[in-house]
Image (cartoon, rainbow, N blue to C red):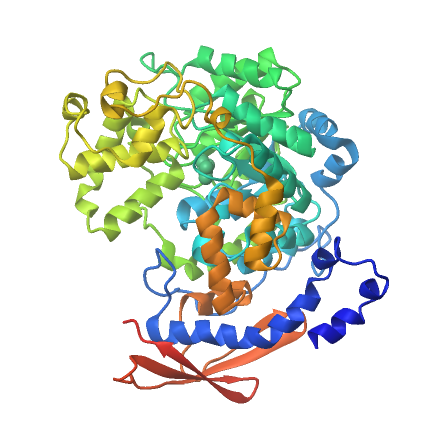
Length: 640
Ligand code: 3PY
Ligand code: ZN
């Protein structure tokens, strides 16, 4: 049937094929695959029925077992808003009409303080180990496009979501981006770009970053928050230039580290203002201030934003924070009052602690003032009813934070990393060492010269802290024995200069002792890398996987092994992004019926009938499912 549909396809008959034909007509290739898709899905479901889910980091089963109840939205006159189609009104329309500079100007002229909603990226990265799946984002997408149509942006891509989608959720992040874009055409999409590292943990050749950003822009990203983990302007420049070339909004970003008002800290107001000057010289559209640990207290926020506003009256300022110590709302309100144009918030059910401050708390705090963000609190609350159900669905990934942690002002661990490290400590049974680990993090940071801590440098400090705890090393021990200690790889890479140059230089004598005969880089790492030969990579991937898209190439360059593992996984189990999360994470009850829409109009009605006994000879079990009325059977290795 594949060949028949191919040779009768109009493009083929025209003799006009093979340039974009394969990209434009994936359904032909699907035809071959679709016969197999149901069987592959059964292989996954059978495996979960026998062995349970193998999703990394999952503990237990979802607490929410029902179908999501979707919210209704109402107009002021009480009539119901039709959410069957997305809204077409929003800041993205201004961006499309006026381009990045016009958009920046309009944002600056807007009287209120706009909001970015981080729920689709940083909020679940910080609270639920980045595990929220595409299907559940799409589940509330059209309602979001109506309820939050006046958002500055919706943060929904980049950061850890790219890697985690492939690695742990077996999903294609590009496919997610395209689907979200279709469902939310009116709100600007924002991504987090780690400067010269793209969405990876180390520098890539400059042309790989350019190529990646070009694909991100083409597939739906509008605003790029570009940061560097050491605030190294040479590293920032690579990302900013790539965004400008692709036609995106360049939000050049300063990472905030520590308490700016503490006279002992090297990152003070003067330091930040100098960095802002350098970013402005790169012609950024918007200035981002990124407080990844939530250490920017309200008074410091007023001083910082106020000083930048005074020096640059026309520059839009967008501030990001985490609510780790519980001061997020106060700090964001202080920023708004001091002249910020946009601040970050998350839906209530996924806000607070290591996530962003609550959107409704910020709305309530600004309500009635000139700074009102222009969102309807009733709509925002209605949307949150969805997220409160979702949080229970993803309960297996909770880090169980107990409350705000003012100690963050001492250890300065970024929000996402704090949850992660806590989770790891409890999984390793090291819960009792948690207090010690936080203290060691502070000491490790001092040893490394008080560096800016955010991916990937936050991992360097975290790895050194864990190394110190597990080897019972004091700071003095580390310095004295640096010449003989077997440091974690990330620490050596940092000391080599593979992550850029830290402000104030590298710590000595630690660096020279620890590196021994290893190389020392004193320029940005990308200058030491050969440019990617795209023709060669394209040919290699085409040969390996049949057909590689530009997005596949970008993924391969970012994460070669993760991308390969993902491709192998879907060869075996198919595209699981269509499977409802409850059945992705846990087996159904015997006799429970559920539906999976493989593609539009192609629905499978499934029922688990029985899991057979263990065969002593093969170590396998038969699993019986009813699929659209027919009994189907799969043989599964019992790995328990
Ligand atoms: C990331 O790089 O993923 C971050 O969220 C940094 O804050
Ligand atoms: Zn963040």
